[in-house]
Length: 128
Image (tube, rainbow, N blue to C red; front, top):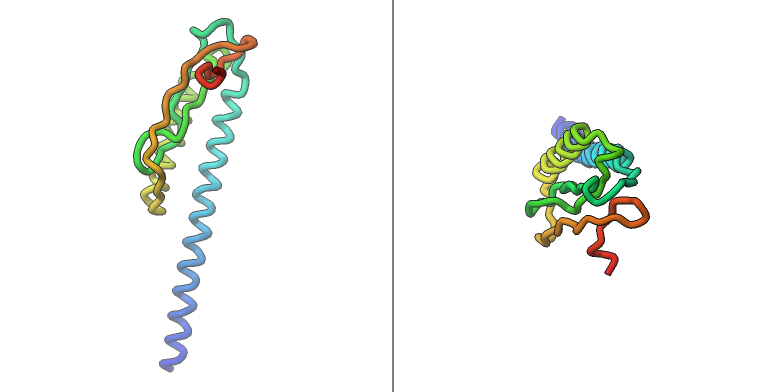
């Protein structure tokens, strides 16, 4: 009887930890799907001039702040929808960071200097 109890306990522990890893993968798969949808929304960066260009902090570093900035054109994006989706993404990543004990470097992502190249919004600070 004691041996059966020990065997059952070992199976239970392995099942719990196995499910935890599977749930972690599922969580980050969901985050990736959310991110892909956002990137799809901002794919067309064509614009008339720099006044059509915007950037938004994307992601949530465990140390705080965004991982990067997304550049988009307000000409081609439903801005309200985009901002809501990015906020949901950032909030979900923040939850996952806490849930899974994520860590990162504490470097600061610098907002881009926006400009227009070939009638498309871009970061001009990386072109120099």
